[in-house]
Image (cartoon, rainbow, N blue to C red; front, side, top):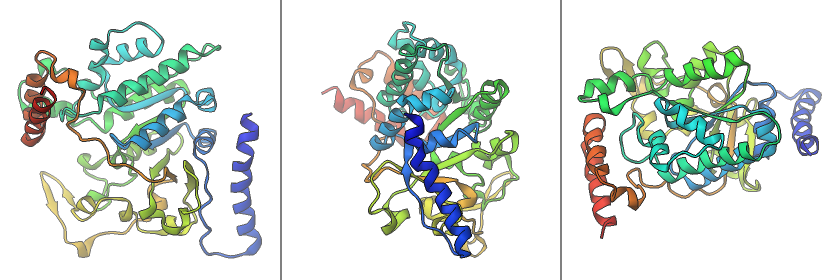
Length: 362
């Protein structure tokens, strides 16, 4: 079945290479969309690590990730799924749960509730659904392989965090810790991993530093892995109508298209980044120093990513402060979450959480 499914994919990419060589034309080739799940599975045949964006709270993005992980072709070739919303301190809980063991929900929630990002969001239902999908894959397998969920967030113990500096000691490792996890748990064991993080973590070079990668503050997961891993990370970014234009009007999502050698690949990468990020660049030393727009560098899309993922129309992401109503009623939840926010995030996040939980309790 996999050979039948992948044949159109192979033919499509070979066809592009052959036609380009035969015609002698040096201009950009059009994007070649293929089935997204088959395309990602195929990427693992030449790469040990594939990076896929986690558009936090977005329903279409979440549904696609679950479909990908549940696909038999994915489970046959991939060993690890690395997630951003998962505190590494609780790796044992995640391992036990996805292997099929009984883990009380109150304990399991620590995986996604106790991360270094203390905005009270982390979309609890989506985190649970991802772990449930991996658990279903493992409990239905007939071979001895186990798909692991590796928790990429630094192992912060909030019981030991009493001031902002305590939090910063962990938060500073949000890029390097998942890289260390992939190197130790995946690459050193000759396994393959899907890394699912927010898109800005997947830049090869950081646009906010004007692509200067000297300072430790501007390192990215993909940038660090590319330097450490024996093979280059295959990096995917989500693209919508704004980025793809008329070219994607006939595409039936989900579709994946490689960008190298295409007009999109030659375009300015800044088009994939919100203006509030792309237009606020600077140097990082003892503090951030902004630079004028006249000094902004240009980096092409194909230098930053390998492929684009098209999921069609996208609904707005869920509110960052939204949590299940039952958690708002849980004794001590709001108080502890507010304490963490005031130590690690803008104060307004605490007000949003209190307002939300007050309304949900009515």
